[in-house]
Amino acid sequence: MGNKVVVSGLVNKRARIMGKIRTLEREVDELRVLADALGMSIKTFDPTYRVNAVKSVRTNSGRSVYFKNREGTRSVLDVLRDSGKPLTIEEIARECEKFAQDPITRSNRLKQTASVRTIVYKLQARGLVKEVSRDGGIQQWRLN
Image (cartoon, rainbow, N blue to C red; front, side):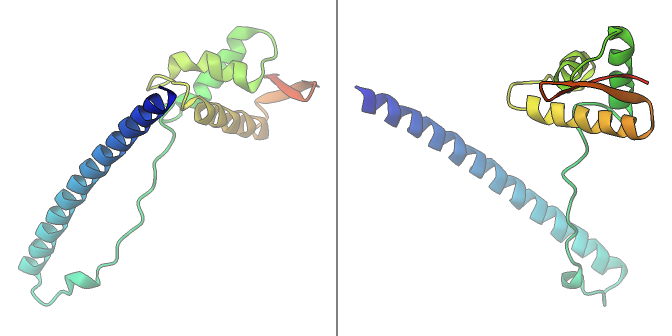
């Protein structure tokens, strides 16, 4: 009985992974078609241009998806201003969830907390927030 449950779970996981691979392969095929079309367009304007000599450029994974541009800083400052008491990074992150662009799930909570931590440290460097205590090794922050 126990083996059937395990096997069923593994089969479902493999099926999801294979589906994702198939989706990504389709996306790769579509991108190759677009790249070839751009190559032909380049050749239209300059027949001597060596399109194969164009090197690929590494794409950036993107900025924080938890806040819009500059919204993270504003959100952290608003949370600290409204609280009236020192807060830990985790407490600030929990309060900032209402300002996030996308819903914060259990899987991306650590990344969102890391984003808030980076914002707090940058605000500390600018002299806007201050670490007030380190009770039990846990930092607490307040507005300066």
